[in-house]
Length: 454
Length: 171
Image (tube, rainbow over all chains, first blue to last red; front, side, top):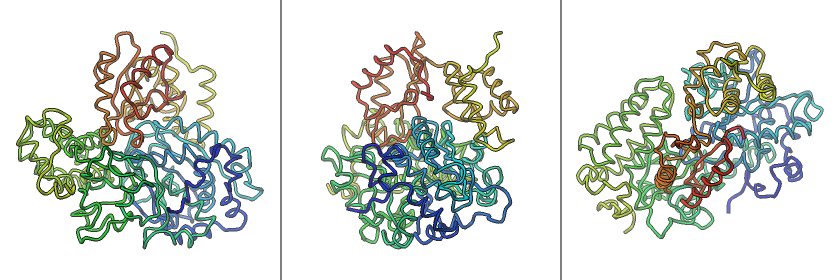
């Protein structure tokens, strides 16, 4: 049983209200930071904690904060990225819906550290019902003197607003998010300059994911060193994992980084094993963008070591035999899942969500979707498989933002690990004519039989 | 042609939203205000509505059109009273979203993208709505309907029909 730093109080009745949240120790980090610490001391604790961005990239949060241009005379901004849209990821929604004051507390403490006087929570438009939950919580925080002028009688003042988007995955990319917050199309910006120098309204800005900002609360309360004791190496603290797909217990689990993947999948404390007594075929461990791994490689690295839920262990083997922790969107596939059809839904997703700014992504995502559609529907050619690899290669690294890479990696990895399944679709079009073909007759090559332990 | 304008209540909200952003940065209010406008004017953004928003924000109409056409939640054509949006991305597909879409198509006797003859329902498929752990799911207005079964879908459609109210992200 790991420590619960973010979710320990999440099931207390009424925790979404200020009073109950406060009675359970809420807003202690604001009191501690504003009354006993300088802003730089708060940043120092975040640095010591080793906290890494929980949105997907895993960049050290304290370092990102330290890049903020503190010499600029412009106002500074902290912007919370609540545009959670990575397929397989639903953790930020859980936090904001169940315990909204945790995010607001983190925003106040974080804004104080960065010297921001106005901060925004940019939330995806589809989460409109959460906008109202957050706005109610913000209203309560203003009434209690935790927002507004001279918070808790200190010289520090902060205004906090919620800003809804309107349906665009790309706005999860931080510069696209800032464009959108300025009332424009969500086209990512060329970097440099980075937001730390020229972000919102060309002023110094830090953009952090919901879970990252929430983690600032336990870090300030307990100290960065204490936080860093949890986890292994450079994967410190706890992580929210969104578990979905063919498992017995889908949901959100807060784990200590370092938990064995096998335990996460099969223990009743977490996913509770594969549903319907079936066998596991594959896992996407960190949201749709990260490479898919077959069952054998998700449980053990190519070197035969036990795979752990850490940034490093999941990445072991590079893209040849490893993957990424990403956003913690953990999607599990049983033996009846069709890898081609899954990949087609992902390709359709990236094609729909490409902003259209860079040709390799705009055109390439469309081609990949079309080619995958025809393979899945029994009209593919053998040469299509290498064509997909070729298109993916030509998108990767050739676009302004990482959406291009995110579209290319799932394609490249699915073909790397499940090539026989693509070939099967081309060889036996009559067998794949039913969209549920593998539910009728699961696909098992010799290699994959071994993988599922059959 | 009748001049269109926001109700007093909506206009108050619009002005409140504009004040969230620094002076001279009122364009930042565009996305939230388009949501208010869509809720007020029958669930879609006509050119006249977009022009109204442009005049309130003191920006060019093209600045509104280019934004409205970029984001998938803004409807640039009329939609049925209830807009039903079914998630179809990987995690929902794994848990049976294809069956939900097929069931809705049969029940409403329309294809995805179409509106029923009585103007009551529009059916759309959408990409990941962050409900993968409670899949399959659909969104109608601001509300998420999760862990769907065909029985649940039937009950929902009946409820929506008898409530006869326009779905809106703002409610």
